[in-house]
Length: 554
Image (cartoon, rainbow, N blue to C red; front, side, top):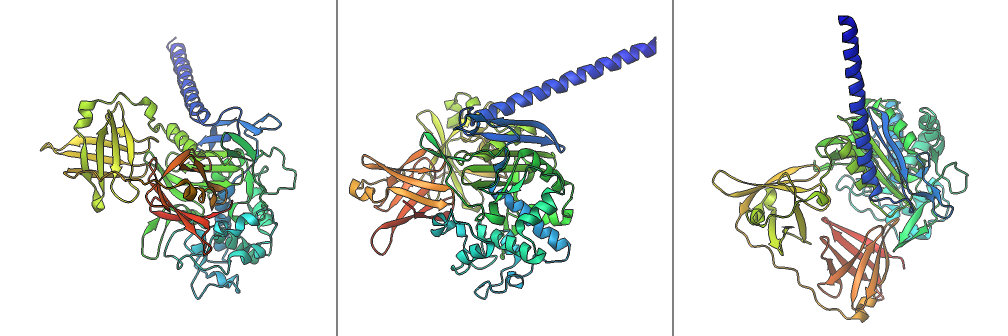
C-alpha cells in the first residue's frame, strides 16, 4: 500500500514537472516571438531564426516573405547568402591546414603567393585572419561597384587590389578587410591544389551533413533559395546583382539555420580543429603595441548581459546575418534575413539575452520620471582616463552627454529597479550617494562597467549651426558608398539637407561650416570633399572615433 502511494506521488511530481517546463517553454516562445515580430512583419522580407541550447534546437521559426513578387512566406528551410559568416569557414580551413603541418599562421604570405607586392613589409597569414594586414580592402574601392556583375577568378580579384597603397603597416591597426580573406582563400587553393569551393564542400559541408549549404551561385538552381531585397524609402526593391565570385572566401557561402547549427555544434565538439586552435580564433588578438582587439580569426568576442562568447555578422547584397554563441550557457542564436535593411544583430542579441534569463531592458517598461529623484543625480561625473559625463534635466526629461568630439545628448529612462537606461537598453546608469553624501554612478555597457565620481563642472555649450545657401547644399545631393551594400544618401528638402544610411531613418544635417555638418540624433559628423575639378566626389563620416571615407557613386 505504501509502495503504491509512493508511485502515485512520484507520478504526480513528474506530471507537475512536465507541466512546469512546458509552461516555461511556452513563455519563452512568446517572448522570442514578440522580439522578432516587432521588427519583421508578415508582409515584408523577413528572417529565419533558430535558438539552440546544449546543441539542440529550442526555437525555430521564420517571419516575413521569401519572395515578395510570388507572395511566398519564409520557412526555416530557406537558403540565404550568409555573407561574412563565410569567414568562419575560411579561418577554420586555414587552422585545419596548420594542424596538418601544411602551413603556420606566422608564415609570410609570399611563401604561397611569391609575386604579391608587400612593399617590403612582413605580412603573415595571422595578419590576414584578424584584419591587421594593412592591405587595401577591395570592397571599399570605388571600382568595386563598377565590377559587381563581373565574374572573376581569385587571381583576377587579387590583381584588383594588390598594387593599391597599404593603409598602415601590418599589425599596427585593426581595420575590417575583405581582401585579407580573398588571399586566404587563394592560399587554401595553392596548398590543397583544389578550389576553395570544393575544399569547403568536401571537408566541411559533406563531413557534417550540411546538405543545404553551398558555395553561392547566381545561375545555379538552389532549392529553397530566399530572394534578396533592399529598401528604398518606404518600398522594397530586388537586391542589386552581385557575382558571387567576388565575395569568394570572404563572403560567398549560402546556408540555412539548421545547417549553421550543425556547424556550431561541430565547432563546439572540436570536429574540425583542436580546442587550442579554436582558442586562437575566438579569443581576440593583439596589435603590435600589445593592445587587445576583440577580433580573432573569423569570430569576434561578445558579451551579452555578462554572458561571454563569440559571434560574427554578415552583410551582402540583399541579405544580413548574425550568429552568436554563449559558451558557459551553451546557447546558440542564428538569424538569417533576406533584406539588407534592418539590424538583425539587435534581434539576435535580444533573443540571446532573453534565453539566458537576462533580458535586455526596454524603454517601453520605463516608469514615469521622478523629478525629485532625477534632480539628485544632475551634474558631472568623472570616470577613468578623464572621461566626463554630464547628467542634465530638461523639460521633465533626463539626458546624458559625454564630453568630447561629436558629443550629443541621449535621453535616459528610469526603470523600476532604480537604474536609468539608454534607448537600446544595453547601456545604463546606477546612481547612488557615498557615505559622505557625494554623488557617484556605475555606468554599464554590454561588456564593461565603470565607476564615475561626482564633480563640479558645467556642461559644454551647445553646438552652433550656420545657414548655408541651397545652391551650395545642392552640390552635396547624391549617393555615397561607405562600404558594399551600405550607402549614405544625401537629399535636399527646402533649405535643409538630410542623410539616410541603408536600413536607417533619415536624419537632418546641421552645418557648422559650408563643408562640415553634424547630426543631433547621433554623435557624428560628415565632411564633404571636392576633387581637383571642384566637384564633390566623396564624404567622410566621423563617428565613434573613426573617420570613414565614402565615394560618391551617383
